[in-house]
Amino acid sequence: MSGHSKWATTKHKKAILDSRRAKSFAKLIKNIEVAARAGGADLAGNPGLELAVAKAKKTSVPSDNIDRAVKRGAGLTGEVIDYSEIIYEARGPQGSAVLIECLTDNKNRAASEVRIGITRNGGSIADPGSVAYMFARKGVVGLPKNGLTEDDVLMAVLDAGADEVKEAGESFEIHSEPTDLRAIVAALEEADIAYESDEIEFVPSMQVELDAEGARKFLKLVDALEELDDVQNVYSNANISAEVMAELEED
Image: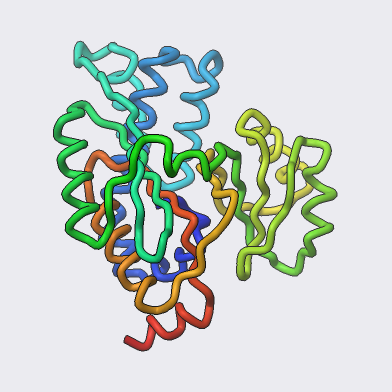
């Protein structure tokens, strides 16, 4: 699931993060392989690969793993890397919308596992296009407030192409067009503002508030989908308030 989602506080427990560390590495390695296959092994001439490698390093993926992934993807090892990008659409509890982004070398397996993950965990498959129109592809940078105001952040990134700065609990989110993401990050670095993550995500145009019952079902659905090897990201317009989250923490 994407890092800045409103339900992310439940993911910040050490046991959960540790259990998913290997899965996170696998996703990052897959992104490197795809980028290298598309544009070659030279980071200087392949912006997509440069970005994928930077993200892997930031997440502490070992350098040897990164180097092997670059060579595999670029065809320098004789292995054939052929992944397909697929997006599935679903409905979650209380009318919430869910997008499941997959990167797979077996479309039939991915389709079957995603369908089972949805239907067995309280969701339903949506017709193509019936969910996707609610989302826009955006660059999203997450950063801790650390005493900063919304205006402080906006002034640093406005000229770099930022569309808006939004509060997200104890953090800010900067939204931009995907093509402006690298410029946003460079502007933050120039202003000496630390950021936690920079991703290209599907951002919802509206949100659906979930009550405690809906939130429990929703988190179960997302957990099941994220466990699938072919699933890279899960996006939703579901919003879980701090009050509902506190109630869930008491369970």
